[in-house]
Length: 294
Length: 294
Image (cartoon, rainbow over all chains, first blue to last red; front, side, top):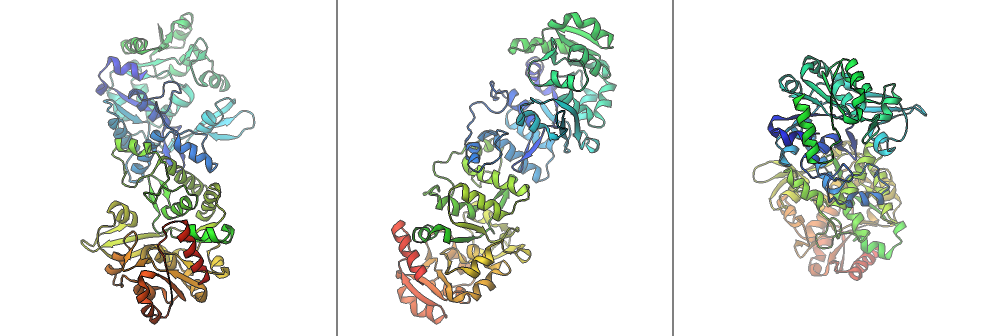
């Protein structure tokens, strides 16, 4: 979605506020998967097959870590490791995550502003339906391949978290606020849970456009559809409308869900029906234009 | 020296007590250069040209870190990084450095016991003669290429440090205690400065054999000769004898220093004159035999 936006709007005009609830400390390193995926994607450096990590990556550190029986379930490529080494060193020197993120994004030559939702530690934790065990998000998502049903989700530490510097200002001054088609529970949810952010967005409701991540009852990738069901929501554009109507005035839904437009409208959010599957630069740009047009 | 010893004695009979004063935390990783160099050397995996790091190493993480202007002065190869990732993760889980070191040494298939001098944090710090600035050991050794004169050296935190589990027992029960030909100030010095270790060695003085790292007035590598001068010691086998006589009964000196044997003896330590330059497996084994014969 961001790739589409930067193709139709000057990058300098865009601020991306990114979920950090799935950050993890592993091997002593501060790893921010969502921030890095945004950065690598916009830098056209991401591995297009995996959808994470760097294209043409080498895996010598992980292979060597296997010798020790180390934790290699969370794969970190050699060049990707450098991002975490840099972030960890800078944080240990007292820099804020927003500052470090700006440095990393700048080093990749990107013009947009990428902000973590908060500089404080928030940890998305997932309670499994089967045995009631609570595990970290990455252990659920990567370790278990999100193949286990979820009973509940919480964002540990979020009550004490403050929005990162610049987040509230970006929301207050944006021409348009776009809620990208991502998992409503564990990707959008943590951002909205940081005290102050939801209120700021509600204030701007008329200018908030969300894009449904659910198309014809399913998520294009990831566990969003299953997770919605498991947590008692409807896995459809209507279910998303119900979740987003309090803070968004417009919901972009896919042409495959055109028949749901009236039901979406009944939730109090204006439906816009366009193709939302971003197959290439062309379709991404078209969706971005539709979103900005509102 | 250890390579020679393991070639003439069963590895299972050897305990190596290793300096950790030059350990460094960088990028959030716990790096123990001396422990790793011992391990990599005995595993025949060390880069023979550099004398540190792994042979056939790749440097993709460091190259990527350069993009961010990160700290790349302390070079960490991709496979070497795995050692630090593993160590840091295990320490963060509450394991002691001795335990983690045992796991790493075991993973390399080595039969000897390698112990850190202490599990506690001790930091060798160097005050420069020129401007009186105090810097960490690695900044002196690697960052400045040990090319600056030193005014003083201290082992920050050593007063509170305790010998790692097994160290005092190894000293008390060893048939022979070998002080390897290493820098007396910054490699042997920190080990002896851990409260309890010097006393334990003094008790075993009759069985302590040291090998002079100074041959014909010079160190084979590193700054030991200059450092001895800078700190007011004589850069010769006699100077080493003076430093080691309190706890060692025998000093092995090189044939090049045969003429100094009487002066060494006058310091109260018995000289043994043999070739001490370890050019290959053969000469290392010969020196090891001489050391064990005492």
